[in-house]
Length: 198
Image (tube, rainbow, N blue to C red; front, top):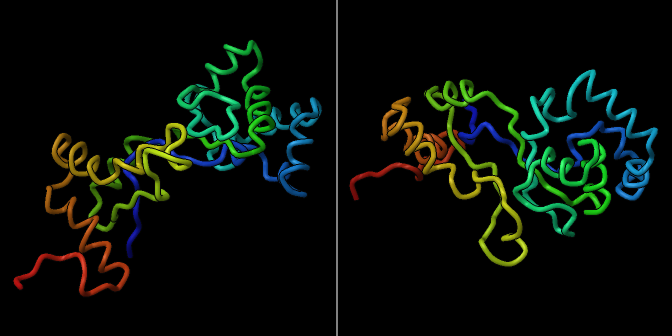
């Protein structure tokens, strides 16, 4: 059995995915209308207090949610929800709702939602492979906007540099195998991922 990871304790998702799923019933326009309603915001606050965020559970702080991409300029990429709320002198959930509305639901975030101890344990596990779970991006044009998750560019160097070389959780050959031959084998690609004579 195999699994894969990207070696970061930060995840990435649309900002709207933090909120309860019922908000999105009926489509984007309906969700944006709901988010403007103070009563709906109070229901969201209550739900977050009870169970945490939809995709991520309990998050320690609004400082652990950072804007990655704001296509319509609703928030400055790189800023946390805590910083945005402080700057706007509002409650953090109001800042979230206001950003989602202004950005027409398109805001993406990076969010600290995992334990570094777990990341290390999985990186060291021989059955765990590595993958970026990222989309294609380039540093220009539409895909070059904002401050995307570092996994897009840094997954493989981070495993080799930080977890293998610096922390010694695995050897260089083990790290390389996780992203080459191990991945090819898991996908049933017998002619890929290994250096062979000839």
